[in-house]
Amino acid sequence: MKIENKLLKKILKIFRGIFLFLGILFVLFIVWMLAGWPIFMDRWLDKTEKPIEADYIVCLASGFVSSNIPTETGWQRLYAAVQLYADGKGQKVIISGGGAGRVTEAEIYGEAAQWLGLPAEALAFDPKSVSTSDHARNILSVPGVAIDRTSSLNVVTSPLHSRRVWLCFRKAGFTNYRVVSRHTAVAAPPEVVREKRVTQFKVHKPSGKSYSEDFFFRLRTRTNHFLAALRECAAIAGYKLKGLV
Image (cartoon, rainbow, N blue to C red; front, side, top):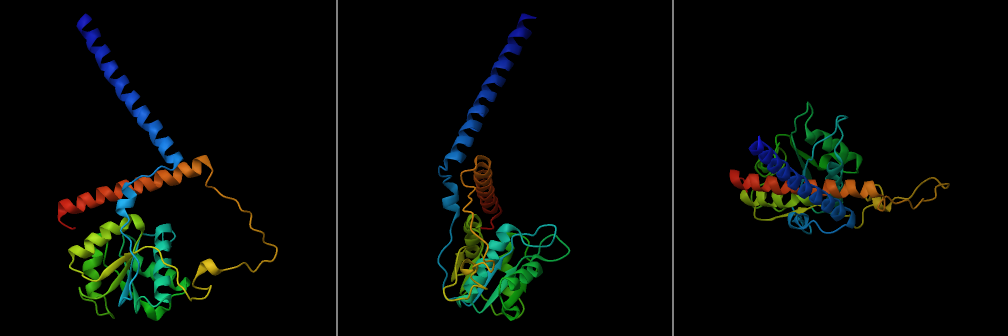
């Protein structure tokens, strides 16, 4: 009986130590997120570069929501691609993405790109790619464009996704490409450069409201960013094990 009690006490002591350790980690994580201290791995993941005068712009799809419109990151990628085209950084925009829905990501993103101001004749589609490693292979057979591994490309994706994309295109043998996630056209009109827009309603007065100081908003956005970076690091590790990068 005494032996059982001693064993039980040891087990309880071990569990208390584990819970104490996890509690300290949790509190430290919350403080780190709220303080805005660097995550570090997100800086390593961001492999984005300045665009070049390229033959084509390749926009990688990023999924869509249930109403068949792009995700938030998808809209950001599309907008950057449209801005690049407006600045003459490519002859056409190739939308690359298949997806798991009844409609391809390429189609959905193509419609959204036109709403953002991209001419329909400037679009080309790769509706087959599902994973990141697919894009670099499948764009070689896109109808209506002539791409080989020496073609100059501006490849558009999100900052945290950029290193994996860069590695995949290098693995596929491309020699003249840049991975881009941010761009604003220099001379395009407000219909294309949305930062230039002004309201048509004279009664409107900007409220100046900001959510940056909101406790829960800041915790949510920073935590989402951290988890996205952590997932991307794991994805790169998985790709290395599979020989895809």
